[in-house]
Length: 288
Length: 270
Image 1 (spheres, chains in turn red, cyan):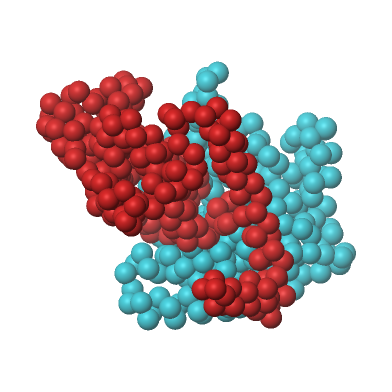
Image 2 (cartoon, rainbow over the protein chains, first blue to last red):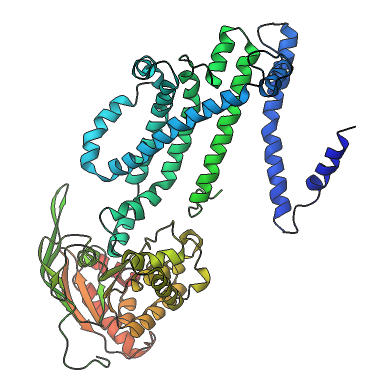
């Protein structure tokens, strides 16, 4: 069997203790346990889904197996050989570009603006009422206007992602700046650091835990909004694929798109979390 | 006092007719009234008083964190109007930068002065060694004990080449053993560097142990009651009769102005 060489390669690594360090085996075991516990519910959901499809005999919802075949074809082709075969990379790449384009714009504007609003009472008095009025408007309500401003195309999608990510990033940054311990400003000033230099030396690092909270929330909203944004008539992108699936009544395509967005959003959050753990390694609360 | 020449140089700090009024929600509150104080280079002065006597407010005005309502505070003749590296503060709650390591915290001031990085490193190493933290250079503040944090806070101010070391109940949050160790080290550092120290405390024993001059303050509004010169030789022995005579005198001065229940409290604290 061609499975054998693989098994030989995997077994020693899985069974042998990774290193002769005392702490490692328990850490590894705890990690495996966490992964195992985390897998229980998804596996149960798959089993229930499969059983429900068989039991009701519905043709509207595909079985997990049907979706798995669709995912394979979407990623590598060779099964259905239709318009969607092996098209995952292009849709994925387009969506990632738009999500991170909008997200990075939101961070590039939200973090500096938040730092300034948090520190400058005049700017806060000037902008706070406007921002408070704009914030409760659902981002999806901007869809018609964004199509007028940016036309039918990727720019409208990027704008929606930007709007969705902007407010969590801005508000968390402002909150982080406002909750910096006054003592730290006094300490910096008596050491000869004052004026604009305080932003770089105290405000930014002290607000960093809140800023990372805002970035993680913003990234989550960005992935939610990409689907809405790509429903506005762009040909490529994971949101567009889901829209097409709906129009064509291809539920397997819809579920495939959902699963891929879910996984990508998860991985993207893990990357942000790893960055956050690296930059906040000084903080006892964030040291994971 | 110890080995100072009779001819005193011009004072490093001169406070004249200082008063401070806070605007509280129920009207103005007078925190300090008619403070006159002269401190010379190399003095170790303790501001001693019960809570609410304005000793911390006085220290914060000297530091430049708060503005006086009237009167003047001058360092070498220059009026104080903002915080500056010539007056280094050591806070009771440390106020270390939690995102910087021990080394980076101590290097903060020298780096602000735009010294060459090699010079910053040399200064940092020197003062890390002086407070005995060389082995902990790359730790973050949350990985240190209270005593170690306060050592970093002291080294951070020393590394900035300060003229006056301001200390606001710096050892109040530490356990008794660590406190007496740090008191000893502070005296060593003071002797080695010739710094001027203004040290706020509510403990009579701490004041008599550390200071050349104890400035006894009374509350409501905060005023200077008297100044007591402590001529005991160092290192001082807290169990010696001379020490305890002075300690009793200062305690009496401190408690003679306040209500009996607070007087008892103050004795119990000290």
